[in-house]
Amino acid sequence: MQNLYPHLEANKELFLNELIDLLKIPSVSANPQFAADVRKAGEFTAQKLKEAGADMVELCETAGYPIVYGEKIIDVNLPTVLVYGHYDVQPADPIELWTSPPFEPVVKDGKVYARGSADDKGQFYMHVKAFQLMMQNNCLPCNVKFMIEGEEEVGSENLETFVKANKDRLKSDVVLISDTAIIANDVPSITTGLRGLAYMQVEVTGPNRDLHSGIYGGAVANPINILCEMIASLHDENRKVTVKGFYDGIIDVSQEERDMMNSAPFDINDYKKHLDIDEVLGETGYTTVERTSIRPTLDVNGIWGGYTGEGAKTVLPSKAYAKISMRLVPNQDNKKIAKLFEEHFKSIAPPYVKVSVEDMHGGEAAVTPTDSIAYKAAAMAMETTFGKKPLPMRSGGSIPIVTMFERELNTKSVLMGFGLDSDAIHSPNEHYGLYNFYKGIETIPYFFKYFAELSK
Image (cartoon, rainbow, N blue to C red):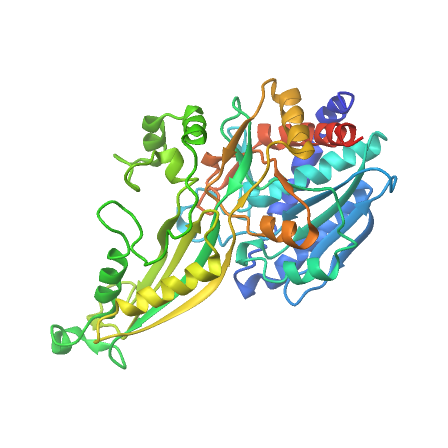
C-alpha cells in the first residue's frame, strides 16, 4: 500500500477539486427547496463511483432521497467491507455568520470551508478516492460495497426499509464509517461509542390569536414566557434532567474506562478559549470529556414565537415553539425516552396554555467492540500512517444507523473518522482540514490490507 502514496501526492489537486465540486451542491435534505440539489449530489456521487471503478452502480430510489449503491467483488471467498456515508448536509443557517458563502467552497489556512466539508462529504469522498487509487494500482485486497445515502441529516427515514429489502445485496463482514472525529492530528483515535438521539418539537398555545400586549398583557398567559419556564424546569440545580424515568436502566461506565477517557489530551482552558466562554456548564460530578460522551443530555436546539422581524411590534403571541434534542446512552430506548418526555412536558404545563409534542426522529446509542478483527485493522492502519497507536474514544454525537446495521445485517461497524471537534459541523464556517482529507485517503487502503490479512 505504500506504493499508493506517490499516486496520492500526484492527484491531490484533482481530488480536492472534485470535492469542491461536490461541496458546491447545496444538498440540504431538511429543506424541500433543495430537493433537486440533493438528488444532484447523489448523481454526482454515483458518477464518481463509476469512474473510480465500481460495478453495479445504481441510484436506488426510496420514498425520499435516493441511496447510491456500488460494489467491486474481486473474489467471493474474500471478506467484504461495506462503506457507509451520506451526501446530504445540514441547513447553512444562520447564513449571516458565515465568513464565506456556505456553498461556495474556500480553501484557506489548510482547510476547505463549506457546508458538508467535514460532515460528511469530505469524509465519505475519501473512501471513493482511496478505492480509486487501489483500483488504478491493482491492489484492492478484498471486496467492497458502497452505500451512500441522502437522508442522514433528517433521521435516515428510508434507510432501514432499503436495508431490510436488500440484505443479501448488502451482506458484508464489516461496515466502515467515516463520520466521526479524531482527538487531534497528532493524537489519532477511533470512536468506540456513540450516543443515541430523541428529537422533539413542542408547541405551547395560549390565546386563540396574537393579542395587543398593552390591552391584554398582564391578564393573559404569554406562551413564550410559559415555554421558557417549562424548559427551565427540565434541569435541576445539578444539571440533571428532571424527566421522570429518564435515567432508568443506564449502565454506569467503569471508573477504569472513565480514567482512560480523561487521560487523553484535553486542555479545559484551550477548550473555553476556542469557544470564547468563561466557564463550562454541565452535570455535577462529571468532567467535560465525560459530559460530552457517556452522559445523556437535554438541549433546546431552537425556540421561536411572536414577532421576530425588524423594528417593534407590541404583540402577545398566540403560540410558542421549541425544538428539543436528547442525546442518549446505552440502555436508553429513544422511543421510550420520547414518550417519557411527552408525558412529562404535558404534565408540567399550567392550565392557562395547551401543549402538543411531536416526536420528530431518533436512534439508539451504540458501543463498538475493540477486540474485533475490524477494530484491530483500523488501529493498525492508523498506526501505520499517523506513526502512533490510536486511542479508543467515545463520541457525543449520534449515528443511529449503527445499531440498525447490527440488528438487520448482523454486522458490526468500525467508526474510523478523520475530522476534528473544531471543524464546526452543523455550525457556520464548517471546515475540513486538507491534512485530514489526504490522511484519510492514505489510511483507508491500509484498513483494507490489514482487514483482509487478519480475516484469513
